[in-house]
Length: 247
Ligand code: IPE
Ligand code: IPE
Ligand code: MG
Image (cartoon, rainbow, N blue to C red; front, side, top):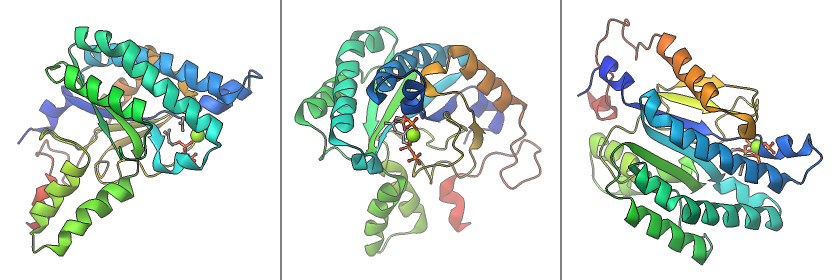
């Protein structure tokens, strides 16, 4: 079990990358231009993350509720994601980054699903940064998926592990240390509800295309100034593991 102090050097940061559409609208541009600019931000942030003590980065790219958007915007987003995966693959490998995608795969366009499989396969050895992209992702669906297994006679500990596994495929800690949401809204929009149980929350008015490596550095500094207590007295006791729920 890692201490709170140790965990600070292996931060798991999750980001709700919001504000692309408004960024574009303010410039009199179509929303898709904002999404395109947002991809550039992803590139910058992925590059900056390891140098800031971040070992796991989970980015919310497309929620299961985003299917409700106009078909043309959805198609543009899917196309951009596919292009990102193909264009960035070598850079991810060179950066020692392991990429995985969380969320449903069965509703994604075939080309995108293939690009995901290829990128995941090609980056399995990445050890410096674990990059997780949440695509067609819904935290409630992930939890419900695990809850179905509750129909089986299993323990709470096993249930907790199932929820965690439903959203990832490694056994490193899934708990989010810091959740950042750009774009000014102060809500979670069905993102990592389970994993954010004790996450520090940081909401910024900065639109995602304007979010910089300096903003990420400032967010990490703010995180380091906060005292996390995990229900204890803030004396450095270890973070409770989810599986301790039965204790
Ligand atoms: C976030 O930006 C990207 C996705 C949700 C896919 P938005 O597209 O939600 O931008 P706003 O919130 O409308 O500005
Ligand atoms: C959350 O943003 C999803 C992503 C950033 C991918 P939304 O823009 O979809 O969230 P709401 O609709 O404002 O809650
Ligand atoms: Mg939005």
